[in-house]
Length: 174
Image (spheres, rainbow, N blue to C red):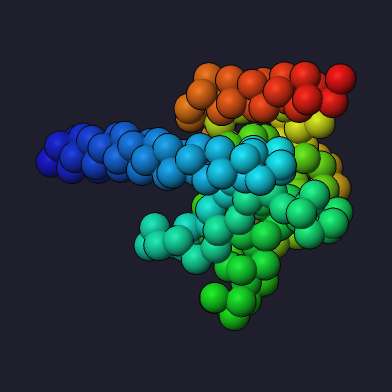
């Protein structure tokens, strides 16, 4: 009996992981479209959403550094600000941030400070990534909070979108 019930539990856990990955993929598709809109407006095409423990969106953001002349106008921070107002708290232990590009060290530090439960991102950033690309603040000895990090969902699409955007920008600035 114990093994049978354990088997059922394990099966449910696997189904939950598959369902969760499908949900992350659906959200990433939405975020890639929002990132495209940011790119058209002259921003680096990055978009983010924060989901609460029940999977409801409580914060959205896309880059707006250029248009608002705000050095903190990263998609992750915009979403974090909005989510903190919606839930009337700064702690996000049971929440998930989904974003199209690996957070930079500034955003990764904010996510650690906000005690984000999980971070899901599409494309890694080997030059400036703060969650494994260049350095990993989620596992750093100074981090008082450790979050789960998942990457690679729609990675190719996100990377190609960023590469096209930067290539167009370089051509336009010649």
